[in-house]
Amino acid sequence: MSAYIKSLIVFLFLVIGVPQHQAVLLAQSSGEQWLDMKDLDIQPHLPKYLLSRKSAVFVSVPRSKRNPSIREDWKKLSEKVHRAFRRMKIDAIAYYYLDDVFASPDVNESFARDMEKREIKYIVVLEQGAPNAAGVESFSITITAFNDKKSFISERQKAWQVQGPVLDVLLNEMRKDVFRAEMVVENYLIPDVPEFFTNTKILEGKRIPTYAMDLKVDKLVVPKFQKYQMEDSTSLDMETRETIEAYNDEVDRKNKRLEEIMLGYPLQYVFSESVSDDDIYNQGHQFALHIILGTGKTVRQMLNYDTDPYETDYVTIKAGSTLSTLPVEAVVYKYYVKHVYTKDVYLGSRWDADLNWEQALENFIFHMKDVLKVQ
Image (cartoon, rainbow, N blue to C red; front, top):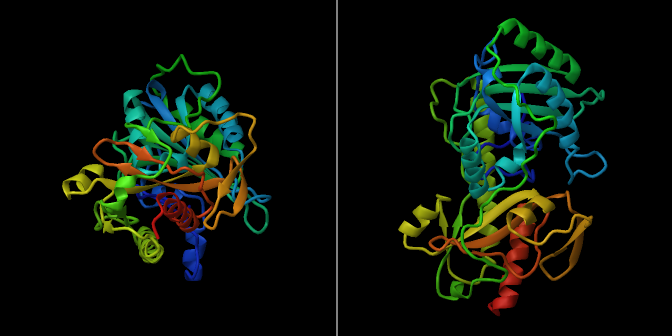
């Protein structure tokens, strides 16, 4: 089995004080646990219309051994697999990094809408696991239908899957299954190279590079990290139930830590069980705290920061105004405030993204207090 994230807030956990079996589970790459929680109904046959419909590929790779804050080269892996898919007549028209799809609730919904508009019918999940103690790699290819929702895949949904230590062997097995299936082929205009999607439109209102002065009088809504809610608890196997329980236990720990950090916020705030803008507005509130996860580069692109293709590092101004230099490809968290009615976003006046969500939140609160002159 793989390990980590499904929820709409789906973020990498900083594992502290977790029992050993959970630490192994939660330290893995995100997105993968989202797939495990679906408890897919693995079938021996590929989807009937795979060669006559469009597919999207979600890719997951391990962190770099040299720098654990950076992902391995997922685009290189995608290029290799795309060549094989093209020969099989699989029309993989879009490649996404799995964690980016779940970077935030807004990103999640936007990518799902994009896929629906592009008439994507199938999702291919390509996973590369970290080498084991003996240096042996692991790969997995899962193919299933896109459910046209922001969850992408439903629980117990039928799927085809192949797993093993050698990618070329898996692709060859897949090619044989495609040949044996004798499917109708209608995919002829398949792109020569993979098209990567690392950005999507999430800013609907004004982009404001400072802090909301109205927070001095209005409460800030702080959405809690959300537990995974099973669609049908009676049908899931014991291993999947244990995966979900471990995930939800970690959510409890994160929410406890969130409450501790928010004690340092000097203005009025209230916690919310919902991340929905409409829910927050209907509760009578205007401002909500948002978090986004991704490489520094993709986060800046999604939030419409200026980016320079030649930049190699970004400078984070931490709480206390100390500086930290992080590679543009380092995976970071960034907090900002959204006005839920106008959709305006207040990004803060300093780049304060950090390697874990706790530090990123402390950075944001510190600089907001400094600029708004509140203690």
